[in-house]
Image 1 (cartoon, helix red, strand yellow):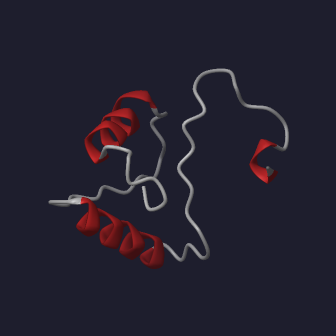
Image 2: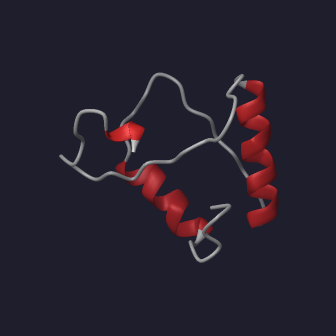
Image 3: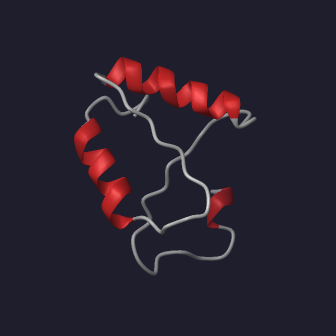
Amino acid sequence: LVSRPDLSVLDTAYSLVTSRALLDRRAVVVAADRDELLARLAEVSAEQGVGGKSAFLFTGQGSQRARMGLE
């Protein structure tokens, strides 16, 4: 979202809710606009001890392959 201002926050949220696996741990961020969303995502990353950059992968079904995260 930071480097892609053309991406809709609503479309991104919808995709996250409807197409991702149900994991044991998840974070929920509520925001009124894009700037607030980015600030709150940064807060969640800091609270969880996530260092460096965060990445959201929308890989689809069956597109995973060995070592794909290194690219």
